[in-house]
Length: 67
Figure 1 (tube, rainbow, N blue to C red):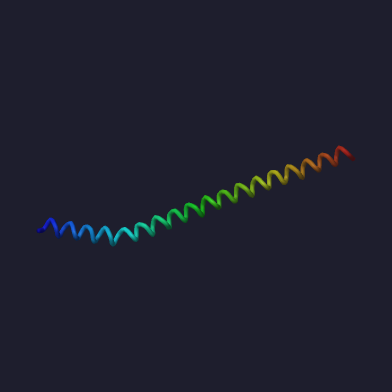
Figure 2: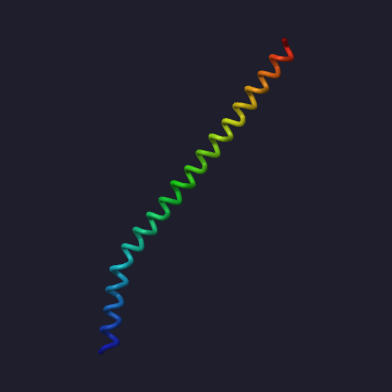
């Protein structure tokens, strides 16, 4: 009898805790996705900046050569 009660209690506790765990897990994954997207955006921006400055420098050197 005690064993059955204990099992029921454990089921209730686990079912109460699982939605919270799920929401916490989704929060964590959302944070991770946001941070990874941020990282991607930043790296893309840096790449764009590097290629842009490289092109600008390239044009500058071309102009210098043509002058």
